[in-house]
Amino acid sequence: MQLERVSRLNSETDEDQEYDLELLTVRSRINTKRVTEAEAEHLKSLRHIKDALSRFDLSKNEVRVYLYLARFGAQKAQRIAEALSVHRTEAYKILRRLEKQGLVSCVFERPMKFVSVPFEKALGSLIEERRQRVHQMEQWKKELLKTWRSLPTPEDKTTRKETFQVLEGRRQLGVKATEILSACTDEIHMILRDETLLWLFNSPFFDDLEKIAKKKGVKVSLITNFSPTSSYVLEEVDLGSGDFDYKEIEDSPCFIISDNGQMLLLLHRDGDDGKPYAMWTNYLTLVQSFRLLFDLLWAEKSVPHEDVTELPELPPEAL
Image (cartoon, rainbow, N blue to C red; front, side):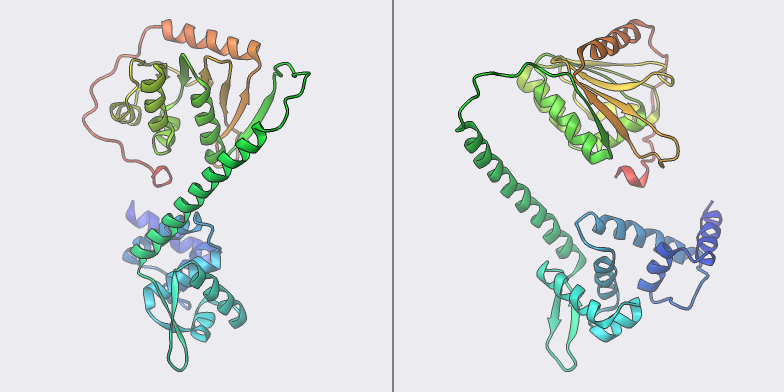
């Protein structure tokens, strides 16, 4: 298996795959197109770090410059530009942006050099900046809601509208799922396959579910397929007074339904590399139809299963 991964990586660099070549450049292997087994593991780790840093609103070149400095120490801007194949002017702009974010600092000597902040400290700074941004947004929310509520209420109140909304990506789905939880007052019903359970488990969803279930007394009912993954997740979460059951749901749609008539229907499109999609709706006829489907499945006989003694190997994208 290890040799297969090395073979695939060598094949990709032979085909001049930009993504892996950039990682090779960071490792100062500009003129080498073959990698060893040990180097393949290093590249895999670098790819994971690079993807993670990109989630902090850092551009591709900002991540490359930071990783280069973090791995090779203090460098002149000219050397950085040459090593990473970027224009010197652009290299200076990137370094200044990284300085403002607290990820890079100057070494005042002739010629002037730049050095990276240690990775652990840099990661802490990025997370703290996000935390402060969220706090500021919470303050804006309070101010805006106060302003909104100060406006006069229209005399003609509109009736409830039944609508649909298409959502794309785990972030949007997670936000909408949390909104459904917040609006729930009595019951919530879910049919979720094990892979969906896993990425929801690695999001704030189940933490929010536990809090709402305890605070409001919401009863949670969950149907999923039996697997090492689903067994592991369900051992870790607390459904309060709710319950779960294992069923054969390979051909069943997956959804989350709230008692106030909202539903998040999870979708899948071929050729989208597993990218999650969903449709949110408060269309009562549709919501009631899927609730009936849930009741029918819940009444079926449970899938027999054995105790799971080994934890599943979680895919990197779920961490």
